[in-house]
Image (cartoon, rainbow, N blue to C red; front, side, top):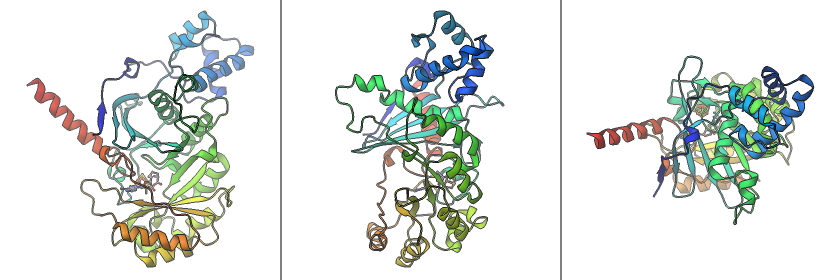
Length: 396
Ligand code: SAH
Ligand code: SF4
């Protein structure tokens, strides 16, 4: 049975208007220290101390910062907080997948939006799937997130905040792991991060870049950029820049092998057709056989799953160091698509394998809690509506 955990520690229920220090660069942290009167020549050292406590230790209060003077801790506490997004619900799937529905701090219009974040444990690794936007401006026809009209970019704080909150909940900070009698064999639970939640990361370039700098900083969250994958639907002009400036692994949501099919599935293809997209991939900075690009391909019955498609895909990828990730379509209420049959997926994979492409089929994870690819967000609103109805009924 999937479980829904709704009683959570007090600290996630926030109505706190103090600015958060999460998501700032070291320089910006030093500037913040200047605001509360820390002399200039001490700021760098103090910023490094804060960095260590916030991102290495994962503390959520200034009181825990034992090598910072009491006086400064009090000043910090008065002026700032070390925030996490508020958890609305936390669900755990039969297969161990965990999904959080998170409520963000109010934006400039006072609105509090919600996003989702999913943790997928596997035998030798654990992957955290994070969001880069509330909703998505693009309208891929097979994606649930694409049906949402409400969109805003997440701040760097909100992007990093998902990782920090997941570490809190999974007990994945170094001190937690040291005290864990059975720590994971991979050393920590969250070994990989994928920007495959809600939103198009390359439409929120600057904040994603800032957040990935923080996530990969060796004195803090310490996730190697080779273990972070940015997935894009194909924003061609930003792909080269992403390689140069963000430097993570790249995944491309391809899904179609002709412009005609891809125009229907990923309407952005009308602006940046397949040939241009694949050229950008060939020129992706740092691409090599050791650093392959992942091509994601959602398997849609009778739409893009024929053997002719598989052969065209092999041809398209010629000369690109590539892996293919076949994703069984995850249905959502109201969708016009169905997932391909298992035999069709196997036959498709076989064509790719024979051509020398590793093409694992992504096992759907967390479907029972609507945490699988493309199922995020709207379903949770439905669940919450149902929960609200149940709560009201119990009051009546
Ligand atoms: N916007 C980015 C990243 C988020 S989507 C992108 O499109 O790449 C992450 C992956 O999930 C993409 O490959 C997307 O195409 C896929 N996806 C979306 N809806 C899906 C669904 N219903 N079933 C399976 N995969 C889906
Ligand atoms: Fe947006 Fe990606 Fe969904 Fe397309 S697949 S609508 S780009 S989140």
